Length: 74
Image (cartoon, rainbow, N blue to C red; front, side, top):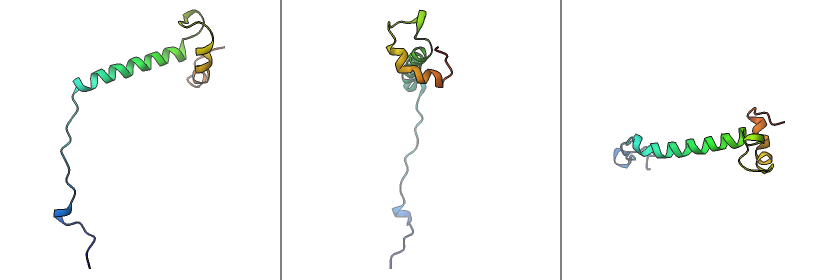
């Protein structure tokens, strides 16, 4: 009858964890930050006098998110 315990020869091997350098993370962090700032602009300020896009389409697309985040819109 075979035992279900792992023997040292069948134990899984682990590789060392290599740290990610700041040079590798920085471009992605900048990209994500710019995308979040654009999203914040469209949800929080894209209406009325500060509008970059004419019409009410952007306002209607982000209307519920605007209320969820506490931005007044009407």
